[in-house]
Image (cartoon, rainbow, N blue to C red; front, side, top):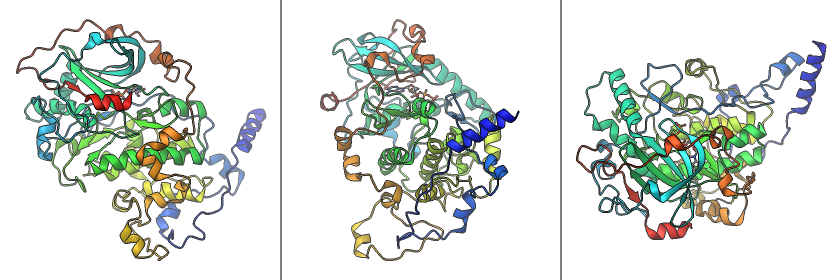
Length: 508
Ligand SMILES: Nc1ncnc2c1ncn2[C@@H]1O[C@H](COP(=O)(O)OP(=O)(O)OP(=O)(O)O)[C@@H](O)[C@H]1O
């Protein structure tokens, strides 16, 4: 017994708090005067008992990957299913979203080139399976080699039957009487959104096609594995590393938000590292596009009301979990959870099931306690991202960068920091080492390595992916292709897509 206590104390010695100078002490612009901030910061331990109570995990809280979920609000147990969503006609995105349209992508898309006229331009036989990389709610993600070019891709498969069963379950649960294809439209989100985007921190989509049983997305292969995999190895990450990833994720989120897209599923499992250690966001199955760029509060789409538990509870904003209207600000709360996870070894709220997590979030009036041992800058960032009240949370999109107007008004001028934070996000102390211009242009990826450079001896080995997946058989996910019926009854008609030649050339 005594030996165990000694061991505990030895471990605590190793976890000594990092003392840093307040980055804000001589910065006129930033006045942290909101009492709520202080409520959220845990006090340094005054006694040994206090010290023992401080939650400083020596190993990661969870070893298990967390599935994304969509469920109606009343469901409070861990989800085993996931549903993809898509912008609906209500959002003015009919042209892009309709699964029944073969001309489904805007002409302004840098990558668009639908293959309705040429449905066989790419098919399963073109890609030779190498190994399994991961598993999602509707199927496997397999590393494949293009037989024509020998290039490697990640093939994400979605089983049509499971999408349809899931859709029926949700419809039954919700006792809704809606046309069937309303939910089917949502399966197109990932393809439609990705086919319109080109950003250094967002996974690229090159082809999509379907056969009688599955939908296939041929994505850029990101060989460094999930951030989740690296976090498991490291336990926690230092603040410079976390700030770097925070900046890369922020660039991706801001880019999405500017295009009216809310990501809604930020978690370490969906952040991949490329071969140079830069972060790439994947899995757009829960993303939502809206014309209402600024606020989605007035939308009546069921995704925002009935099926409000969307994403992964540990990282989802309180307003989503409470079934309240929400907007793009929810992604910044999730970023706060992700940063907290990287720094502390677990997200702010954890529990054995979703109900426990949701109860904890609801009971906690002032938001999560920020560990005292983080630097003042990091505490400040977490405080403002993790505000429970979305109106008090940092409106990062609004206060993203210093504008010309701001500079004209005088940089050194004092700004009131009351209920809303007006400090420009990119100027925050934790980003002092970030060259935003280089990062946003994508040039940084070519000139600089990220903080964790994944070990890759052979891209085909997928060494940075969990052996739980890489040792899996891909057979059941790689059967003979039976072409999809080319009839008006096929609910997934119009899914096929091919990126333009110039887009492919640019990447390879
Ligand atoms: N482009 C890619 N390159 C390398 N690995 C990938 C890629 N896309 C996905 N993966 C791997 O496959 C896993 C599952 O993919 P993804 O998250 O897209 O599936 P999902 O069905 O949406 O999963 P979930 O139900 O957890 O949301 C990822 O976490 C990752 O490990």
